[in-house]
Image (tube, rainbow, N blue to C red):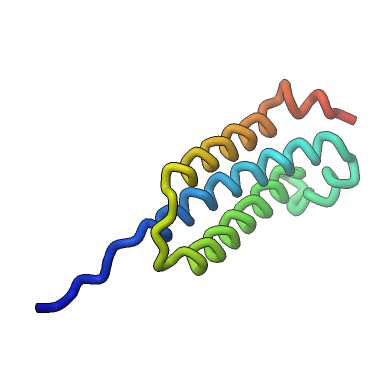
Length: 109
């Protein structure tokens, strides 16, 4: 009889944590673009959309890189999924805060 390979939760945890990292990145870039004029100009990858183009492109790139790195580290691991999930929720909440106008406008130049 064939022995089954045990299932691991590392790849799923990597995807979930990477989403939190991407959300936090978007929040940080949004606040940074509001706080610093040079950052706002640097994030303007496409003029009709302004700095939003750079924010979303960079946040997506960070999400993909984080996902790839975490997946390669955890592809055959069993990780503490509850802890990863809580950390992800905190990262998403912080990212949301960074994109909330009442928050990022307080850093306006």
